[in-house]
Length: 469
Image (cartoon, rainbow, N blue to C red; front, side):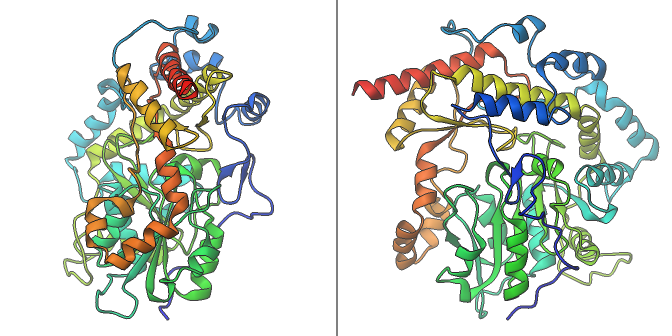
């Protein structure tokens, strides 16, 4: 049995005493979904230091230079019931720091002439992010992308997979973005897909242990779908008891880690994405969060061609280093993080208020999921298709972020053996149901009330058409 690499005991949170508003490794006890106005109000009062009220958004924006998502008049007005036709609405419109906010950092780069190879801005960003997620200075290491961060975590923790070895399989959910499987495959592992828990949407450690291919698994790659963290403590126990290394693709999990200090493990590395589509971004980038000092040294060595302290390549390696220019974007974004999170929370609450009593389908919004997403869960696949068509007819972009499941992506479907395809169709019912019913809606820190009302009106019209059938 493969020995687990890592540090001491995991720092996963105590499930018996979850942090404020969260349970079982990071899922909020209640999110802003339809039919829960009282829970919304209570939650917002309890977590005001994370999600300031709408009244404070413009003031913070004036102080910090971050553009507010709503005018003061819009903040006070209820969403219009019947919005007029308007310009197309993109599913996501990134909003990175403007040039004025970047200039102080760019001038520092000009002064030092250190552009890459772990320059001072990269080290500063690592330190500030480590403080935010409550890990020691070595506990967060930056990478050039989220996919590279995941590859670094896999290689540093489990090594390369060997196709002809006794345990060539990487067990992972099909309910995730395709990069999860691609990263594992690039590291030599053969992806085999498992289903997820219908409530958490994440891998269940006990179900993983019972998977028919577990005996061939040399790696488990869990995911944090839409930023919902899996049971980190349970995964750490699974790793300790079986010796199979576990890595978490927590691409959109940055806010969840900020809101649940102590979640980052000493034994289970987590990969984050800071792509422009994420709510915290360096334009392109990622990070490995892991409390194991020796493991993070391996991460840094692999990310630098196998070099560490010398010019001798002593391990497998590649160039996965973040540049100081990308770190400058991240530092400028951290400078305005409070205002940005306030704006994101206001967008979520505006969606919930606009949909209240008008839409029967469920909305999944922050803080249950990452602020990078707003999700509509239809009652069935047909209703989801009608919603998709109605949004398209009104020039509103939507997206099935995870497609129809990674197991249905052409690359992985075509490379699976016939018996594996048949098995996947029968053992992944939760993944198939979620992918057939979930639709990504437009969101952005500056998404205005008129756009939100227009989106909700299209959803309501699609539902009315379904009832009339």
